[in-house]
Image (cartoon, rainbow over all chains, first blue to last red; front, side, top):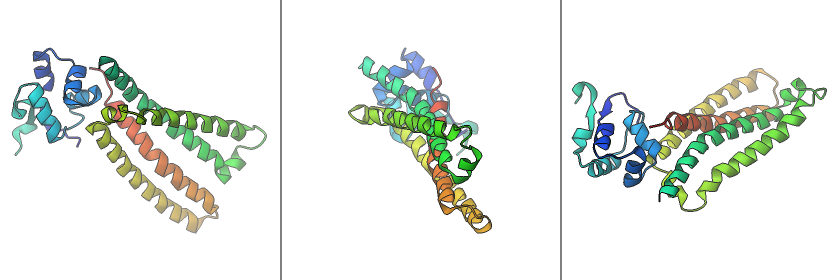
Amino acid sequence: MESERLGNWLKMHRARLNLTQGELAERVGVTRKTINSVENGIFVPSTVLALKLSRVLQTPVDDLFYLHNDEL
Amino acid sequence: MEEHMSRLEVLSKQRPVLLLLSALAFAAWQGTELGFMHSEISDETGLARFIAPVAITVWICTSVGLLAPFIGRRKLASEDEMTRYNRLTAFNWGYGIAMIAVGAALILASRTDWPAIDIVRLILIAGVVAPMLRFALMELRSSDGE
């Protein structure tokens, strides 16, 4: 699941809502470490987690994640 | 809830450290049981007699520390998808290492007169320690600060 191709704007949208990694983690039901890893591109989240993040951050999934070099 | 989360945070930070210690202790303990190690670490120094009990003690303590959080409700919260992914990757990796060890054991068994118990013990060490180290390193890598 590690990938260099998936980028994200998680940190920006989280900051917009004044949420810490821990608070966001709590709301989507994962550990803070997982949020940190997703933000840093170490871990690619499942579709379920991406949708939960999208819901909590009130942002479409497409605006949270993107493919580098616009692949596909 | 906040206290619960910070407890989880502590647990998820402790886990890789305990795993590392546990893996090293297991390797040290089993390593002292190898026949050629007995001849290397002679009775003059008594090193084997010192290492083995210390390693076993560390292994038991770290194993208890690793298993304790699994008793109770904390398990569900600390077992999120990244942890499961890391564990699966580590097991796959460990399987590969164990297979390499089996191949090496086959060569050793056919070309040397090493006792079978030592060769099997080496496979055991590789098969147990490799996934633990890999999982610990993956967890450490993802536990950097905000």
